[in-house]
Image (cartoon, rainbow, N blue to C red; front, side):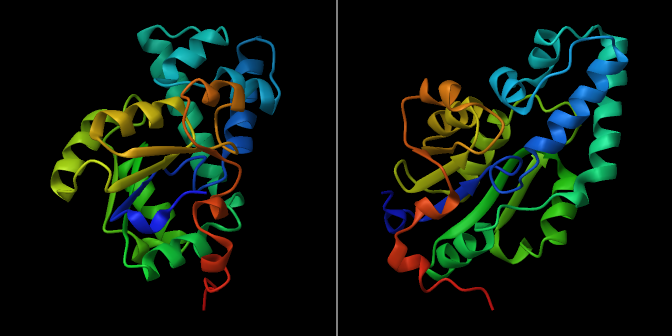
Length: 223
């Protein structure tokens, strides 16, 4: 069990950690694969191959990632994602957990590889803006790395090593957390398989509710 009360701040990843968009991403990828006459994949296969930077997993699936084509398929993916994102939602226990952490006096933020303006928009759509002191996204659609933004954000927060928990769903989240001096924890419901996540050799959780004790959750009803 994670002792959430020992932390002063929680940094959240967004896609796959708070927002349940794995099925959406795998569906769009299958559309792109079909158009490229490449073999389609299951959700489990998607989670086994997904990685950062995302160009590497496109390449692993057989896509032509030359400059011109990479821009084309990236824009196509984002166009489909934006058109369908409201058909998906945050995890069922996400708001309860965010509420309880806020009530404990622990500040929270989001560090994402999602484009900034669409991150702002989607967080607001789900009524979550009040929970975060900052939403940090990228200035492009190519989902490269969150490391630079993470280092800048951690410096701005001013917390010491051991005072910040980083909750994510990928090995990249683990790498970023370690690099910025936050304690990483990964959820197994997101964009990478459990087998991949185990290589990070840190705490894995099967639901967001595992972040806090049952006693704390019992008092976390959202009004």
